[in-house]
Image 1 (spheres, rainbow, N blue to C red):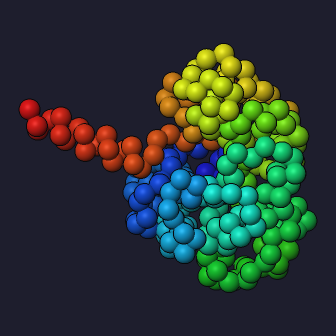
Image 2 (cartoon, rainbow, N blue to C red; image 1 turned 135 degrees about the horizontal axis):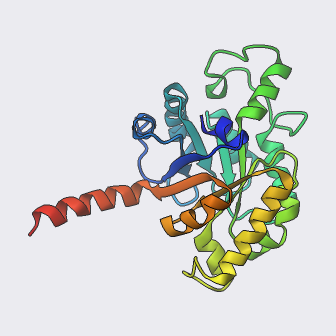
Length: 252
C-alpha cells in the first residue's frame, strides 16, 4: 500500500476526491491501478461521518484512504484517523508549532499524544491485535502525516517543519503557493521553482517524503528530482473531461 511504499522510498500514485462520496470509489481507484486517493474536506463538503464509511471500504479494498482536513485541529486530525484514514494532510501549514500539533494529534505515544480507542475503523473493528504498545507502534508506522506547504511563510520555515518528529511528508500545493508568492498561475516560473527547490532540500536533509498535487508539466519536472507522493487530477475534472469527450464525439 501507499504508506509502506513511500516510507521505503518508493513512489505511490493517487488522486484527489472532492464530490464523489460513494464508498465504492475505493474499488474503482484500486481497479484503476492507483495506490491511494485523498478526500478533500478543505474544498469539498464531506463530513467525518460520511468519510467513515468510505474509509472503511478503502481498508477492505487494500487502498490507502487519505484525508485533507479543512484546518489544523485535534477534532479533524484525530477524528479522520479514528474514522479509518491512513493519512492526514493539513493545508497551508506554515510553522514548526503547527507541525508539532499535527504530529501530536496524528501519532500515538511516544511520538505524539493521539488518544487510543480500542475498537473502531482504525482497528478494523477487531481490537488492537496485540498490546497497546505494539498497536501504537504499528499505527505510527502505517499512518502518513502530511504537511501541505503552499505559502511563502511555509517555505521560509520549511527546514524546521521537515525536521519535526512525526511529520512524514511535505506536499506542495502549487496554485496557492504561486498566489502567496505573488505570481498567480505561473507554476513553472523561476519564483515557484526556487520555492520548490527549497522544500526539496529540506525534505532530503531530513529524510522525509516529497509530494506534489500538480498538473502534468510540474509533476514531470519534479518526479525525477525525488517526488514520490504523486497526486494527479481530481474526480470533478475526471468526470468533466469524460463527459466532454462524449459530447465532442457525438454532438457534431
